[in-house]
View 1: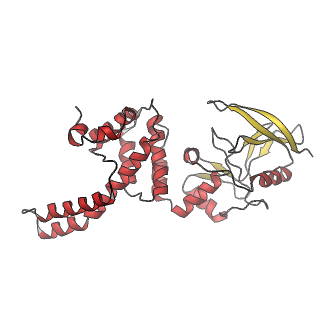
View 2: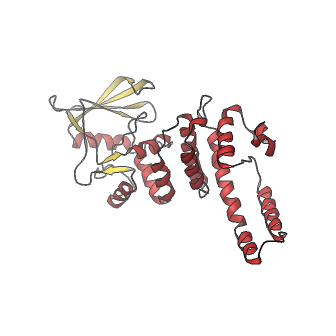
View 3: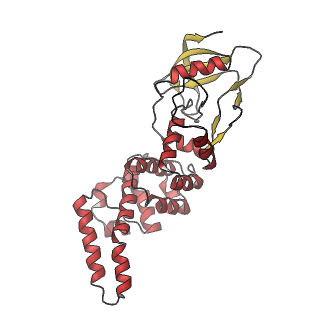
Amino acid sequence: MSPLNDVVPPLASKTTDIAAELLSKLNCGLGFLPEFGSRRQDEEEAIRYLIEEIKEETDTPPLLKAARISNARKILKAYLNQNAIIELAIEQLSKSNHAELVDDDWLSRFMDAAQHVSSKEVQLIWAALLARECNSPGTIPKTLLHTLSFIPPSLAKKFEEICSCNINPHNPEVIIDYKNPQARFHFGFDDLKELERHGLIFFGDAFPFSERTAKLLICKDNNDGYVAEPLKAAEKNINIGYVLLTEDGKQLCSILSIRTPDFFDAYIQEFAKHNDLKLTEIRIKHMQDDGHITYEKINPVREE
């Protein structure tokens, strides 16, 4: 029997075999013992117990006792944050996950950062990162953990807004034309420069980026989208806006559940007009795991 089962017997009934490797790695590698399903009164009871334990220590100097009592709530809060994220991550683990292959240093850095994440909304993001790394070890770079540890929540919201214009569900790619009159973005030039400094995007502040392709597939979140093609047949470059996602940015974008904005259709049509693109509405029939997309053309939106 593993040390985890010896110390926390109820845990086995709270989890499944899917999470066994992750829990074992946390316990054996980091000494972390999760306890799921705790209530507010359980947390207060734990605080009181910890403080009483410290008070009853006879060999501890008074100054050290005072310091440890002062830190009691901080210690428990850090644990609860980590515990909540692990519980959320377990819900997203695949049956064929390879948690046992997750790098020990990666997991240690993750847990160090997770103890400071108390927002429920942000905990969901961190849980998705842990689940993705367990399902496919080596996918989430350590640099992304570092970035998420320091990026202000308000700036993270701006990045989410950028990701709402993702046009590729398999390999995230965004069309950000912040000069587009149809755009109703809540970020500006300074926000984009700051996101670039954090390593999530490349920002072409003066000139848009281009992609060498004869057509550009633009997918929305409802299985509809567009095909954009240059009006001039000889033209093989298509402008794709002022923002490219870095590898860290792509990984973060791919785990966010964000809907296409309401203004997206008018925004893309204005984008096509400004960049001399023929635009055809499509319905996506099938998306393969390798990113290949089968679609049918429905209606030409802009032909000249």
